[in-house]
Length: 337
Image 1 (cartoon, one colour):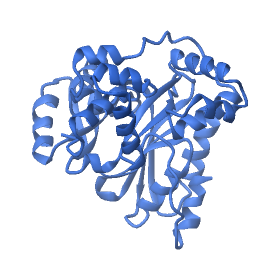
Image 2 (cartoon, one colour; image 1 turned 120 degrees about the vertical axis):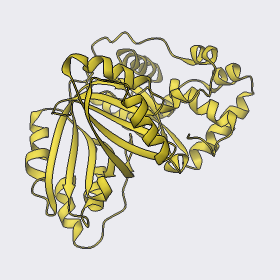
Image 3 (spheres, one colour; image 1 turned 60 degrees about the vertical axis):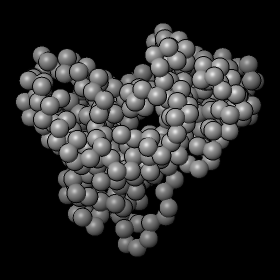
Image 4 (cartoon, helix red, strand yellow; image 1 turned 90 degrees about the vertical axis):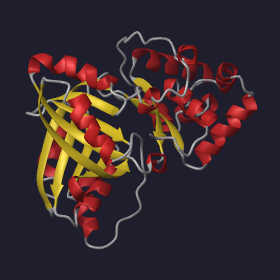
């Protein structure tokens, strides 16, 4: 399905990094029975060519933030500039062009109700050429975040997965400090940034950085993801699904979706369509087969809306977009601010 441009060792390395973004290369080398230098060289090539990025990200639900899934309906000429403006915000991720390029979808995280109102009630609706906005809370993740599609591709054996999987999190309460946010800014750009770099960014000692990094990971606030270059998905069909599920069956259907090899993300949401998923299929025929077999086999699903993802403007991490030209710059600046 994906990874066709990577060889076997590259795929195994990427799988190892999805399991633990900061796993020492020596440990990966031991498990994969190759040299440290080989693993370091492979990673350096994948990263320098932009094929992968390891990112340190935070879970909004663990931080008490309000995660929204926003759909913005635009006139055809406005969709891309609006998507780019949303992508420049530091509270967005997974900004996509969908529905034939006339709609933009994005994950937006708000620290409180005021942040939510500012974007959803003031900035987006007042942006010219935006003709409609809908937004829903994300209530529960069934698959996504630290659990990436990479984990479903079988590059590593079960024994290798077990050897490379970090200890389970204890889920203890954890509040971010200003110092934490400085460290997270660095990890958001490079999840494998060294302790020396993190200490320099925070002004703390290397010992304190190591301890705090461990605490944030153990609490589940901090997790690591592997961001893949779109070229690794070339030839694949990606779609967003909105499913209406009987409430009594929502948890069971969400858990079933999480096991499907095509599902890259699945979450319960508010709204009439109470389950959202992102899927990846090899081609249109495979998409049809998926909808008429795996989805059709779940009788609690009452209705399905399938929207092709035309382009991903922003993935899970920060992205610096080029400056916009023309009259659309002033219109989209309202969203970015």
